[in-house]
Length: 349
Image 1 (cartoon, one colour):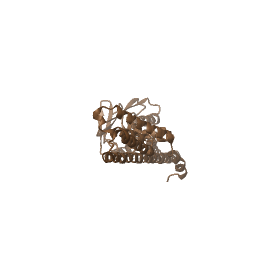
Image 2 (cartoon, rainbow, N blue to C red; image 1 turned 60 degrees about the horizontal axis):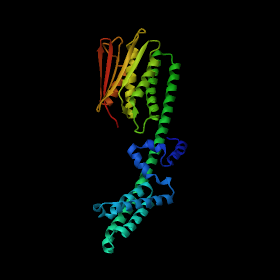
Image 3 (cartoon, rainbow, N blue to C red; image 1 turned 30 degrees about the vertical axis):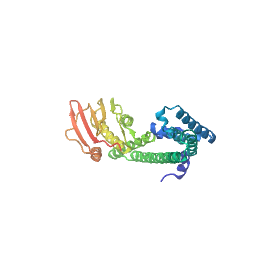
Image 4 (spheres, rainbow, N blue to C red; image 1 turned 135 degrees about the vertical axis):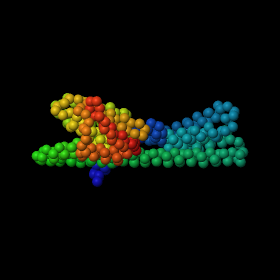
């Protein structure tokens, strides 16, 4: 459950003024431009909005007077942009005022003197202007509600990420205490392996805390951080380098976590089996992607692939994750070392 006090405190973030940086971060550039236009009204007092609306109408009237004869046959057409801009830039009242002022000027200067001839286009224009102002106001209200809902959902997500990260940290601490308390080397090794897997998930939540507005995790920095931590933990005094190459890939958190677990197991296995007796070497992690597939290649220059690969917990986990992501696992011996390739179906949702 979420902490009610935290949500109540953070919910105040939803009451922000138009034009703040948080809104700009929530929306793409074009959407932000439209959003900005629809929320300029709070920046101006009502008298200034009405004066500017009448100025737009006056400009439209001047444009009609200066227009060439073919365009002059449509006198009300010049006032439509003025009504639209007054509605979008300011508010519904400004749109109504611009519509009425345009109708008055058009009836005095441009429409036929006959009431029967002038009334139909004038009525249509007034109804259109009022409808345009009302629709624009509804659009402004809708965008405001959507922005507030987005901020609220982000608050809930950050609270969830924070609490999950704390829970994972607690689990890791308990496993470490248990590993120190147990004297059986096999139990200690199993507990340390479990700690490593939990920490892979914890690193995903670290990335969730700083991810972009699209909700995706950049795979490159995540894999580099993960492999750096594995190298520090596993190499000891052995001069073993871990080199990472990763395409520019952004994935949903669930798929990023699964890929992190696969890389964790492959790199850990390379440290454990490829470099016995303080042997030096290097481990290369190469992650590539196209529109449909994603490949993870981990190769080393160690003692080579074993003739009979062990089916331990790590190997079973790799095969399970690959099967879940509609992928495959293959192992190939190299002249010096071993290469493991995992090909997965890409899912960017």
